[in-house]
Amino acid sequence: MQLTDNTILITGGASGIGRGLAEAFHKLGNTVIIAGRRKALLDEVTQANPGMHAIELDIASAASIQRAAAQLTRDFPKLNVLINNAGIMPFDDAAGEIDEDTMLATVGTNLLGPIRMTSALVGHLKQQPRATIINNTSVLAYVPLAATAVYSATKAALHSYTLSQRFMLRDTSVRLQEIAPPWVNTDLIVKSDDPRAMPLAAFIEQTMAALASDKEEVVVESALPMRNNAGPNEHALVNEFNAYIAANPIPVQ
Image 1 (tube, rainbow, N blue to C red):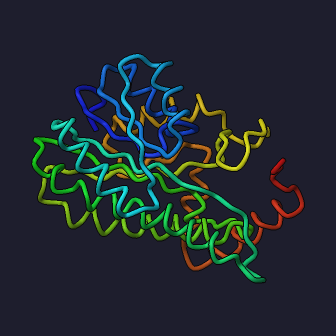
Image 2 (cartoon, one colour):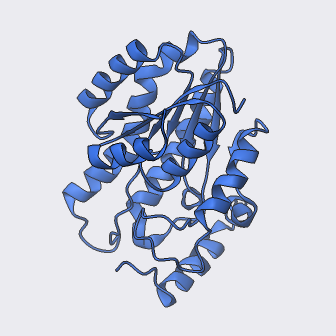
Image 3 (cartoon, rainbow, N blue to C red):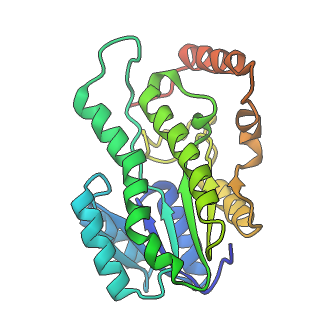
């Protein structure tokens, strides 16, 4: 994608990868709008980045998405980039009973949210001379983390949806890119500074460079083995990865 002269909406833009992308695009002179549920956090980010805009949005609510889309197209008629970044990552137990509310919240936020957000804005995006939709999935779409089975499944589903949507938009001005992050040191679960997590600054730097290349999939070098795992023998790496995590748990406190 072209990295300048854009009007960009980033869901979940007040923290973690979303905030990192928002600040990187803001520094390049783009008009950036961050969206999220926590007004205080939105205000904190916009105050730290003068000229950045914010809008309250509950990505798990279809009604909130429709209200936000109407406001965005009215107030930012040049909106031409949508970054579907908002997500939650609760732990679960696929071998036991999964809490119903947690399951629905994960699917509603990580899968239905991006689908609804794109659906609400795609008509507007197709009217722009050039536009981009970026879906933030995860390498766990390819090598699921068994302890977050529902989260991993939503990311696999969003990857699949992205492939279909890219094809369906092939004859329009809208391009589809996908970001598939590895474990990045953010507060998605807890910001633990675990040495196994990729530093956020390094991830943003490499991701921005890859976005500029018009790659359909943006996968940082350290995550390529997981991205390339798909195939008839994929279970071997999935089992090896999860056995390692089970023996070396992710800190959650």
